[in-house]
Amino acid sequence: MCMSKSKKPLISPGVKLVLIILLIPASITIYALAFLAWEELRSIPFINGLVHNEMDAIQGDFDLQIPEEYIPIYLSAEKEYGVPWTLLAAHHRIETRFSTMKTLVSPVGAEGHMQFMPCTFVGWDHPTCSDLGTGEITEAEKTDPKTIQKYGGYGVDANQDGIADPFNIEDAIFSAANYLAQAGVAEGNFKKAIYNYNHSEQYVEDILYYYHLYEEVSNELEQLVLAKNKEIN
Image: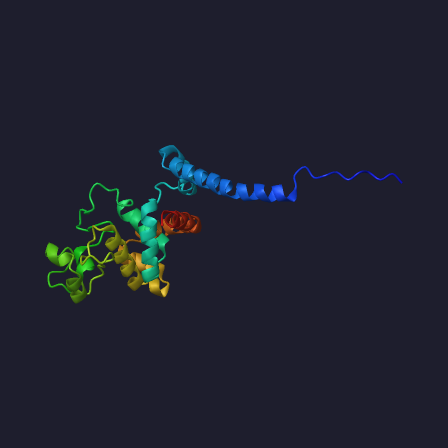
């Protein structure tokens, strides 16, 4: 039987070990440089747009997209009051087209991002409240948490700055969640709560339409927003 002569390895085990030791810091350096380069690229508007275009793609069929910056506020209000964030978004969409209206004061006197009548925000027990609910409430009273508590209003100081302001987006959304929770959502009666918010059957239909529309993509939107926040932090 013919025996073939064994070949010596091209690289000895000792040399292999040295190469591995040398490659480890080189690999770390390359990875770090690639990461830094990617972070720089992401700051370029075009690249940043490519990274975050998923939000637009998910809402591509919407007549008006939910602004990304409002979703964390809706989610916080949902956590606080148990009102689905998608329902809050639906109200925001109907009331002020996500705060894009030229004025946040309606012809009948509703105020702020979520369109509260002053007496609803401050409380109908206020001595000047009657009829539609504009009242003769001073500006100082309108945003005073103690006054709101005294008269049983729904205004909330969400950002803890000592002011409950319907023109502050956080306060407005939390106040809407507070109202909807007490008006029926906490009991699972969405239609009752929505109708109490605005006494119109058409209003109820419109809100529920957008609520169900947003519910279909709520998980995807939440994941994107949470991932981005984690990225920033």
